[in-house]
Length: 264
Image (tube, helix red, strand yellow):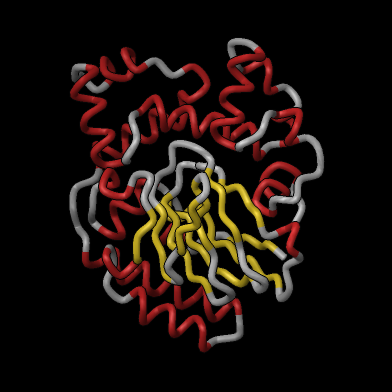
């Protein structure tokens, strides 16, 4: 079972959603998964079997309390027999405001959460001790709100830039964006990449693919929103690990089934 939960009002715009994966026994052919870059930084609590990032022939163990930074392309993971996780999908602004750090240090990285945010291990133990999802979500909300009080930096400029990309993703022009913020293209890209962990173009590409992947109506006409078939194929393989035609078939990968086919 995969479920998602909306954040409380005070965290809207900072937390996209909280997600839960709960499979007491995962058959072997469902243990390989593909994680799509969705523009989030994820804080993940794992209560089940150990799981690993798969890169070529290597399997790299993922910490039970981990933060996964911005990803540029799809990642392959392998779960164990019991899959029980809770995750917080932070928006780029959410990560900056809650943890008070630029996103670039985490790009393409998976780190022990305690290296980034104090109190994550204690929160993990609290979540493990509570069998009730509502209580767990309340504890997560309280932790995030407490973190917000500790980080009071001025994020207005990067917030405006993120909003610009998230509204103009269909036909994003970096030159026009730089003009709108009255800076050079190079200055814009350096500033945005420092705080988000991706260039405006890379982040915009992810937002665009995600918007179309998550909306059934938009999925049916994806070709109309890309230059040509070749461009769409390359984009889909980069962000989902498969072509759109392959994704239309029932997938064994749990995340792809949920994002692309609304199956949990």
